[in-house]
Every structure is written in C-alpha cells, then in structure tokens.
Length: 170
Image 1 (tube, rainbow, N blue to C red):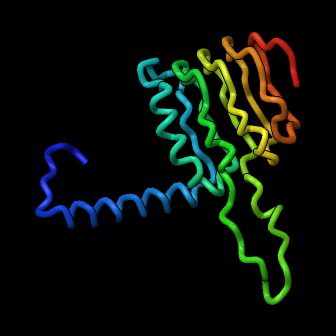
Image 2: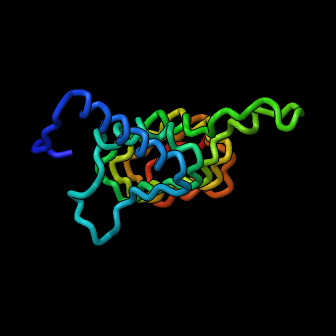
C-alpha cells in the first residue's frame, strides 16, 4: 500500500492487513513454480539483491508445493536464504480412513529444480539444501564467485557447473 492510504481506524488497518497476509499466504501455498529470474533483456538494475532475497526467504516456508525455483540472472545476490530447506508440505493427518499413514515421506520438500545460472555474485549455498531430498536438478553455470557446495545436495541427477570457481565436489 502506498503512503497516501489513510485508514479510518487502526482496526480497519489491521483487518485489511490480516486479509492481505492471508491472500499472500494462499498464493504462495498453491504455487508450483516460482520464477524470479532476470531475463537477458532486463537491465542489471532489476536484479534482486541480498535484502530482497532475505525478504523472499521469509515467504519460502509458505511455498509448500513448489517444484521449480528459478533465480537465474540475479547478479547482485551473494547467498540464498537458509529457509529454502523449510519448503515442506504441511503435516498430514496421521490416519487416512482409519489406517495409519506414513508421515516421513509426506514431509519431504517437493522442490525438484533450482536454477541459479548467471548469479555472478553468488558466494555460498545454504546448508538447508541438504534437506531438499527431491532436488534432482541444480544449475550453477556462470556462478563465478561460488567456491564450494554444501556437504550434500538432494538426490541430484543433473548438476550444471559451467564456468565457476568450485574447489571440489562433496
């Protein structure tokens, strides 16, 4: 909301704020793909920075069904939010039609693909990537300031590493 908005009361402002938070949470909860990548035709000034990435990090735990996250082209970010490891579906009921339901598999992050190509200032990946057990594809091409990967990174089938400064693989 802009600074020009005037509320008739604090109660009205709180009511609208609660509604806005619910709508945002609902949108993020149902999203399957998030594309915050920067297109080549966009100016570098449109790139996300660490402050914006930190703000995104506060929403990532709400992203319970996201299978694909694209951040490519954001040359100003130096790290990714630790909350990436918290992108898990909500807990399910322990019983389905009277039968016990396995809960461990239902709490696994659905994130399968993370694309960070051309994030030229990216220096580190969060340790939370270790908990993304469904992560199958990781693109780190042209992440020229990235020197190391976390100890474990999902169940990768595809790792794209072209032109970077990695000093070894886990």
